[in-house]
Length: 317
Image 1: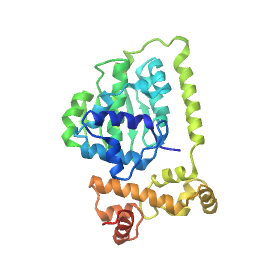
Image 2 (image 1 turned 90 degrees about the vertical axis):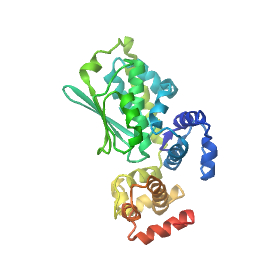
Image 3 (image 1 turned 180 degrees about the vertical axis):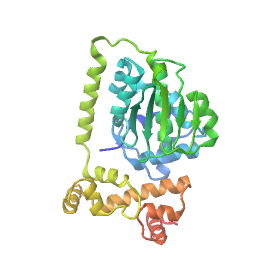
Image 4 (image 1 turned 135 degrees about the vertical axis):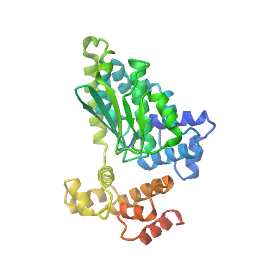
């Protein structure tokens, strides 16, 4: 199953408990039940968790506070691999390659220039808090492992959270801008190069191969419905949910796509409806989009069609 590691929700649960917020009770009020520990969390659950954070977390820079509290060895083999990384650039590359072990809803890429290294965090599939947490966690790992005072040259955030600006500036120790096209961390490669450590016996390479095998095992658990959900999040607009478009993105014929989904006990229309509901809940909660814009993005021909869907999902407009 695609999704986010259960370890993440344990971290959020502990952080909220320190503020006397019962995460599981708040989720239950919304009809959300957490699965078994050790499993993977679907996008509907992670979105609901972030909404609890927004409503009850209290800290405008919650993702930073959460990252400060994390012991990255809690990430198991990935945490050990980070410890074994011989330098900051190697650790960043490892985190980017294997971020899917923690969450498939956040994609991390690394671009190297002659003097700078840019880390891009793509969170289009999930709540903006995921990008806030990911950026803070990256710096937490680098500082604990290599250099406690490591600064960023610039942090561009693909969201707007003015109440947290001061906290971001203090934590990241660099220029911070908001409402950027993408979340990007810019680091000075000369500074990073000062903090390498020996790698006796190629331990980092050993763990890199091990993590690749873990990701391959995880990929085998992916269903066609998981792949359809991912395809739906690639582009919003009038064709959202169109079976022929989804089939084309998955390199299948529409008939084959529907047959595989039927074998899993679902259909393209059911998966599309689930994703529409998750996205509508998130966008309505954020308040940045009008009903008309949401209707367009989710492929509804008219705003009235969205209104009927809202009543069907939740019994109100």
